[in-house]
Image (cartoon, rainbow, N blue to C red; front, side, top):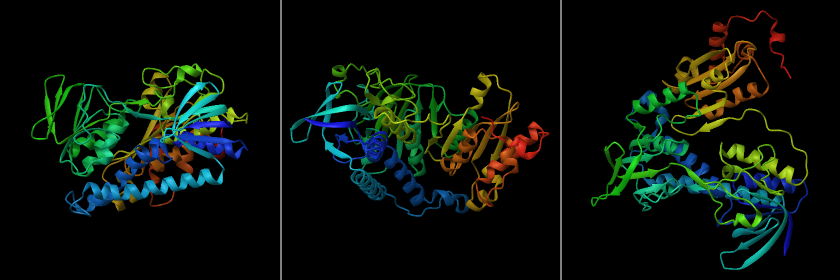
Length: 476
């Protein structure tokens, strides 16, 4: 039997970061991956493919230049699904090559096959050729990720009625599409296809979308979507999805409304890929969505020596946070000291336009009873915004009236997922509004919106009667 200090099941963001961290600490590490190539959902069907698709769509359509040249402007007049896949395959090959090299240079062993527990410290791995091996581990990390939720009443056919994995394999771009689910994945794909001039309708049973995002940002985002003729239907569940003899899809809503489109994308949730792990053998039980409960500080499960990280543990289900979770879990598993993660992490939604947020929303600040003030900057107020032809996008910051510290930063618009890191740093360093007022930002940049929003809040709050250097001190 093969014996290792640390065995990782899954090679997505959490798994690969954990494996490399443990290897750098001198441990004997094995990664078990059931896919034919390393990378997990993040590389092959999730994060990297969807973001590559987005970037390709924006480039080929000339989306970013339409502020100058009009909505009819195109870089490529006839865009086909193959145009999108060409860049996607190049990107995926590069990601896999980088990951394979990282494993190789850190001496991380790999094994292809499906893993299942025999007992808390023993795993059985069935390879594609039917060979079965047993592996013993001092500690195990489950980083198996998730797969799309596929309810029985949706007649998925892989061509016209698809889940969020299958959408990457389409042969032709649809002229019309119904997206069921206004979560992160549904909204990302809905806006990407809208940018490709597909007529998109989004159906969501809740009364709004992206409830964890600041309400003002969601309102601005929704306005931008409706302004380009996307249909947003909230508060309605889907009763039935059918494929008509003509090939079109028919979607019947709870209120009797009928929608027709060339394609239906079902993107209403994901489930943990834990069903093949035989968790009962090690004393673990997954919840109804296949997720594993863990200690939020160490990511150890209820069974000592077994850890879980990434999407399989639930919210926030981000590649960035999954990597950090994997690193923390690996250090704890091998007995290495680990610092607590920073209080605030950024959340990025790669829709068109982007949304990114860090810290408290205005609604959360109100619930906590914190006296506050907001500062807002519209991208059109910046010179860089004019140069880029932006007529939308905004940055919002929330400050405590008592301490003047930044409580949250929320952005919708071009480059939001890059810009948010300035606010993230100030949040975690306990910075105040004076940082933005007294600091110098490159000109012209979109980052100048921080200064504009800071001045907006500062003018509303009133000047702090202290010396600048005192106002900028960071409290412990």
